[in-house]
Length: 171
Image 1 (cartoon, rainbow, N blue to C red):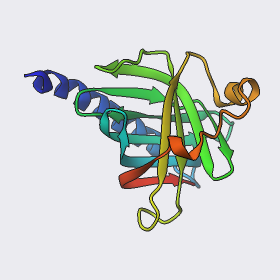
Image 2 (cartoon, one colour):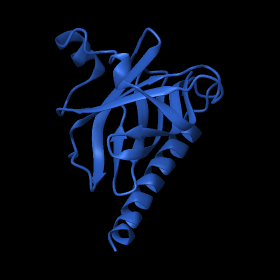
Image 3 (cartoon, rainbow, N blue to C red):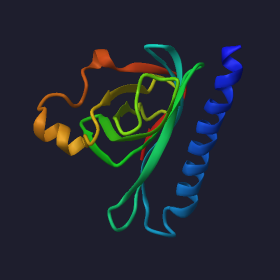
């Protein structure tokens, strides 16, 4: 039974991402440390392989360093990623960083995970938040993409999908 072998991997990746997010949030309490939450999310959306669960967090520390990452999981596979760069472009927040773990996906550790979100500002009601993702070559940052590929970001509206459940929040 294929799912029984993959379920522990997916669970491990989700647990690792949850622990990372909890650690980051615990270490970076706004007000007490001067940390600046940039974005958080926990949502289900439709991807090329069906429903995907996306969970992420990005925080900027007082010294300008970024702490962030998350996980994207489908029924049969999952990947974990760091978030190491970002840029707000109009209503869209784009974030990127390396894939740090990949199980039963066509993506490799080291490739760049691109995550762009549009927060409706309603906390999960009304118009749906939107998400677009892509996998790019290793080493790409948002700044590199903006400098070398004008017009690539933000992605066109046709590349975004509505979230089905959850909330994406730009702080």
